[in-house]
Image (tube, rainbow, N blue to C red):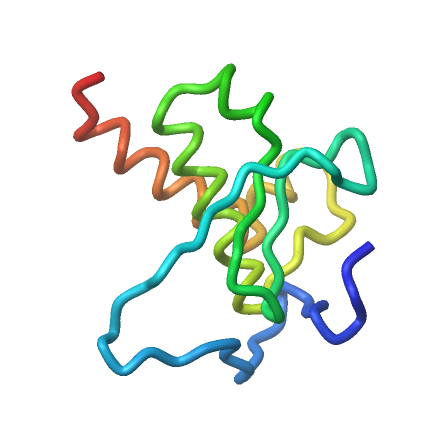
Length: 113
């Protein structure tokens, strides 16, 4: 379960920025992690933690574009955006999913794998 202090509705803007770098670069600390609370969880990212976590079995079955989608999606959680309880097409409009999809399409365009 996401701690209350780390939850923000992706429909609303928040002024909370979990970290600020003076070099204006995004630092991504990514770890493979198996011990999630729910079996359907692929990964997680929280504003209160510097790491993004991903289940290794997810990585083994995916192409680079899908993996970058996942990392981008989890990275948005560091800014407080949550997935919400939406299902179907509406869910793809949430910030975390829309940003992940955008990054995936960019990687697909330029990936030579």
